[in-house]
Length: 397
Image (tube, rainbow, N blue to C red; front, side, top):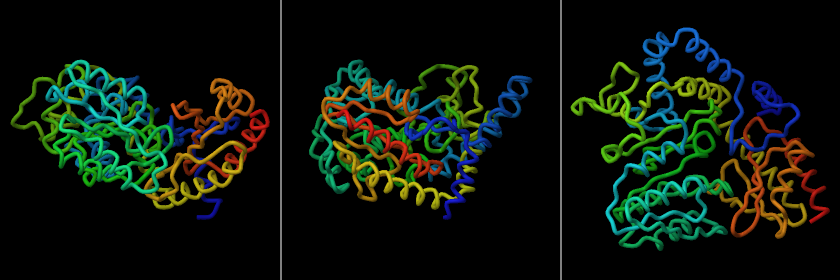
């Protein structure tokens, strides 16, 4: 598509003109139309909460559930809304009962908070928490599947992994990993924080037992919108994090649509007393916005920017690409290794205070990384701005 098209698309985003935002991987900014919609909903919630929560919300909630499930190629009857992926995974980790003695298996690149989540689950159930090393220089998805398969033992009860790794943006072969786990009788749980909206996603094909995701990153929905998706039958093994009005429900009609915009089973997970449902209800507006731009065009635009990031930053002294170029193994986040011995705190401070650039410096056992996120609204000029800043900083490396 012509550059004018993407300039017009960018103009529809709420962006700070003084900041180069290359960090959708942490938080996505909002399109104006999404901000306006969630603000309208909150205005009605503020002026007449009873009418909004009791009468208006239920049909809007079911519509949002259907729209998100369709976008993810899933079943709305098995999609529970959550505040974020952390809440989704904690629901699983806090209530799933696994046979002890045994182990919970994670990759060695998991998000720190999620590692702690499973650490607590293992401690509570008398299980071992074990990580296996991902081949970070893997050139094919098969190498990753092989590494996981080799790590399985007869004590492995659960496999947890990120669909897209937060540090490097490496996309893991989720469908193949889940199929392997299933053949070994191992429960599969996926942290899909970065996948929805970044890569094409088909939850039914992936067929994990549990999949948690965010809508506030690449889908560009409001903060406070996430989900938990269950495989058929897997929902029977879970309990909600909080007991509220969904706790006692008719088990015979657990999966029938009810008057609350859910099903009794889904309300069992979603109900947590009074909360602001507006982020959930605004998800369809976020989906409509990107569908209007054209998902295929967005992915093509992202891939073009990713290639530009590789070309522009690979020439900077001391930096080396840390994200595979294989089409199935990368999305919209590109990481580079930085020279040894640098101060991450100083790097972050300089990037922000001197150059007003949002791009995280990530600390890993194998060294520092800088991660660059490029959504459709980003530009080659912003990537150049980062490149120029890093070139200036590299003079002191």
